[in-house]
Image (cartoon, rainbow, N blue to C red; front, side, top):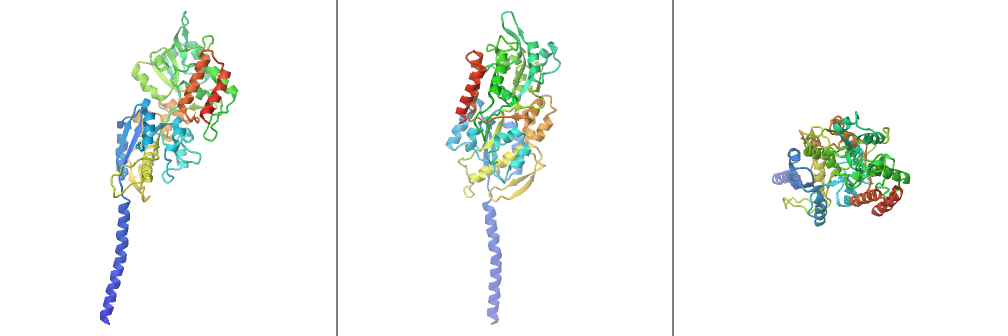
Length: 460
């Protein structure tokens, strides 16, 4: 009896011990299966590897699931075709840059941010309004995250304005018109020797079609959106914008300051023959490199109304590839597409959002998070290295007083864009219409009716 009792006790003890051991080993197995390493590949234009070096090193300290992050820079002229081909083959990058105007084309090819990483409320709070307009989908999906936004500003040659007795750059279009008249000089042969402003033509003015878009917004035109893709503006606004813009290239007009024979606008500006041009921040270095002695400054874009200021944006944002053949670093711990997308978006959150000195890193398999210390603000580091205007609201506030970037930072707060299914084709439409008016082949009224018809064919 005693012997049987001892046997029963031993059996009970072993059962208790076994019941404790099995969950322990089972837990270890689960934790082991959640371990992984992943590589991220990023494609872009303009920026160099060195612009991201410090940021990538900091991120690898904050995310133990990252093996390496590789950045590849492409020439801007071939970049779009490289991306399209790579996505079609399934061998594209994890993260890549797109121009904001390209999003209608890429929306079905990129993965929105998982809601456990980013939500609409935090996105709108972090970025200037135009980013939300461009990269938040109809149902609140977040499709992209930029480091920089660029908007139009007025470049002006201080020496040419001073010589004409102009003490400050124009703040309105009527002031710009008056100032341009004072500066523009035409010789006895009818040649413009000094131009007040580069406006009026299509092909020898950098981003001429963006200036048209700007004027349309400032006049109050209702431009196409995600929810209403057809172009239904007021005909009077369209005719007025085209007439105003092209008057600068009409030799019989009092506003005459430019023509199709002039040097390209950027060249004319750094050569010192052009007093004012409208452009983005990315040409600051172009001008400084071409003519380091040019005495120029940058002012906010002129407005029709100072009470309701509007600007126009043209910028690039990071997006995440929806489908990619995943390189497995450990076949025993495979990574699926959900993990890859999550890790790509986790990096973009680290890169573009403000941190408080720490970062909550999520394991994309278990969804558990752990806090890691972070000693840098990645977006701030990037902007200081590249000299670009900010996309993030708090950094825009810091840049508003910068003598070079201030005009662009302020412009980003009031910038708008519109929905274009094929931005290149729409730019071609605007340019051909402007050129037609310049050549006397069509009136501004006729031209705008044609614009509406052709753009609605693109956006249908």
